[in-house]
Amino acid sequence: MRERRTFAERTKVLKSDEGKRKFFLVYEGASTEEIYFNALDNSGVYTDKNPLIELVPLIRSYSEDGWSNPKKILDRVIANLEEEKTGWITYESLLNRIMEYLNEQHILTTSKVQAKAIWNILETCCTKVLQKTLREDVEDIAKDCDILIKYLNKESEVVNIVTDISDIIKSTSTYDENIDKICLVIDRDKDSFISTPNNRQYEYVVKTCKKKGFGLYVTNPCFEFWLLLHFDEVFCLDRDKLLENPQITSQRRYTEYELRKLLPGYTKSKYNVEALMSRVDKAVQNEKKFCEDIVKLEYEAGSNVGRLIEELK
Image (cartoon, rainbow, N blue to C red; front, side, top):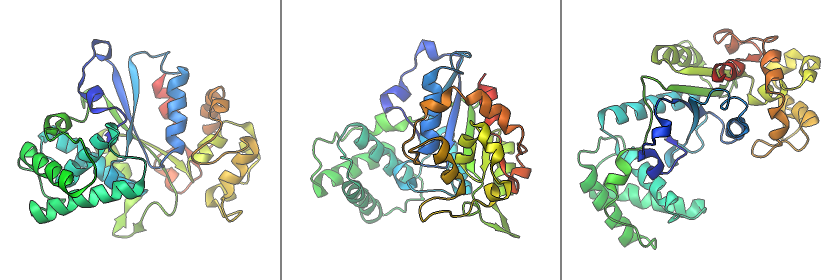
C-alpha cells in the first residue's frame, strides 16, 4: 500500500499541513470507492467544514494489484506500518517501491506487459543475484538498490534510471499514529471472506481493526448499496435480494442493476459521481434505516460508511 503522492510530496513537510489529522483510506475495490471519496474531497462539502482534516487514499503497490480479500489487505497495511516504524522492509516492499519510483518518473509506460517484465527482472535479481526471497528483510537498502538498478539497466531496454535512488525510496509515508486514522472501506461480499470454524475472517478483521484503532467501514453486500442509499428509491427495493445480491444479467448483480436505473451509465470504473455529492446527507440519513452495526453487518444488509462521513464533519 502507498499514498497517492509522489515520493517528493511524501517527504516534503509543509507548515500548512502541521496539525492536520489525516484519514488514510484503504479501499477493497480498485476504483469505485476511490472515485467517490476523491469527489467528496474535491467538493469540499466536508473537508472545507473541517479544514484540519485531510483525506489520503492508499493505493495498491505493484504486487498487491488485484487483491480483494479484506483480511489480506488488512494484514498488509499492518505490515507496512510496522516497516515504517522499524525501518526494516522486505525485498517485496523494496521491489514495490522501485516500481513506484519508475512509474512516477514515467520510466514505465502504461503497458502491463512492460511492468510485468520489469518486475520479473527485479525478482530474478533478488533471488538469483542477491539470493534472497521476497519475504526476507533487507539489511542494506542502499547496497541492494544499487545492485538491483544496475541489473535492471543491464537486462532491460529501460534507460536513464539513476542508480542512487535508495534515499528517495526509504521514506514512503506521512502517517502519524498519534493523530491520524487508518480507514478500511470494504464490502461484505460473500466471496471476499473465508468463513470456516478455524478461519473466521470477518470476525478477525473486526477485532483486529478495533485493537489497532483502525476505522472499519463495511457495506453489505457491496459499495453499490452505499451509492443506492443516496436515493429514496432504495426503500422500494427487495431487502432479501439486496442481501443476496443475485446475478440479474451476465454482467450485473442486483445492486448494480438497480443503481444503473438511478445513475444511468454507471460502471465500477466510471460514473456520474457529481450527481451524488448533493445527496450525501440523504445517504447518511437513509443508512440509519438499515443495519449500521459493524458486527451485525456480517449477515445483514446495510452500511456504516455514513458514520465515516459524519466523522469527517
